[in-house]
Image (cartoon, rainbow, N blue to C red):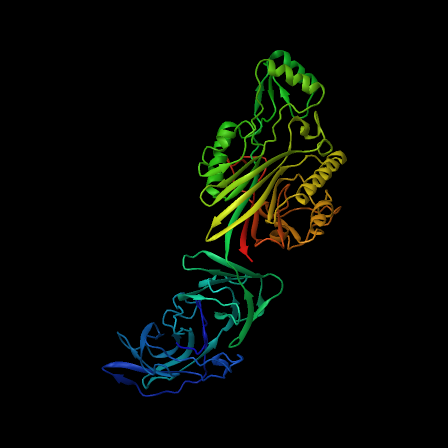
Length: 581
């Protein structure tokens, strides 16, 4: 099927066409002993020929090897190539049974769904599914007059000439599966007039919602994606709907933050120190008769941490940050050989006289261990890290020692890393901050977190970098309880040349931040509800690349064989596109 357009990508599911009411009976015709039927398409400028285009519509013409089906019998084009009036010959078997049937083009269409076989070729040949009424009687088969059912989405796409599009995928809430357009040869873009891609789609006068269009290269890798989240995309029968995009080279970046709950289950402190710890009556700590001090009885322990490592490896995250990577570090990393990691500061470990020093620290409420529990990992194949900076919270950003989640027992804080990305022909830098904020919901805890926001804010302001920045970790923050947006996000957005967003807000909350001070029942599924762990992303005008969030969710399948959670947190996972401007 030929159309006189400059460049078309035929989707895997192109346009179907509605039956005409015309059914002129003609005598049965025989060519070389086989049944022949005449089939026509409407001329350019009519609704059937996709009128409404600036060029008065496209003529739909028969092309060599086109096939139609009637009652399951296949007919192949015999004559009329390059015209709207063709003769089709029965390929094999007997004639269709008498009765009223529909004729379909292409033969694989069959009248339901969208065909997935038609492909664009470089000389602008395209196959368009159509439908016509076919009357079979003793007098023969009626002429077939094919007309449209669907419409076209025209995409005018601009981009640098080194971008070559092999396929386009379209998804929407109302589509049960993606509509995929495939080129015979990759199509090079240009930055001036752009290239037109025509995507045949089922009619939807009410409009498709949450349209997402993905452009891919010859290797099936995503070049860029565009979303039409606000508003509806209306597709009308035999009408062209227009949209324009500039696309850029990009690569995927899948990141996650996860509290691995690595506090030891217990510490064998001995009778003297055990008695002392028991006398302190520390919240969440139990001392048994043998003076074993239990500080994380519900934690994953050795075996659970090994299971965590396997679950993490199966996710294939590109970059991740851990909280509470303390005593089970080796187990947590046992399946992560393909990753480079940051500095491990150790766990809750002491021996002999060291316990005496711990008692002295406990008496003056100083951190027992100079460890932050943070860890950072990047895939070694396409990523590398440098510039590690380890920063402890200021004293006013930590509250609680024997109570209020015992934040003062370790040197909690945040870390900074530069990550070099070399993937899909893109070389760029993305900066990361991973952190573990003060826990608790009392006024003193909230104030400590606010002081922590200010400390990170000052750190970001002082960075000598033009790279985009991802800030993730256990923020211990909820928007209704903590004035996080006003005290942190809004202040960053007020800085010249900077834009900051929360991946959860963008992907799971319609781009709207929850209102501070208004607590609502969060009855959403785990995957989309607000959690304490957050992933924020910051773009800079001066950077040659930008981050675009594609998806974000809380991973709910990190469970043990008995169905219990492997950690007391769900991993927060986000997928980004790193786009060359």
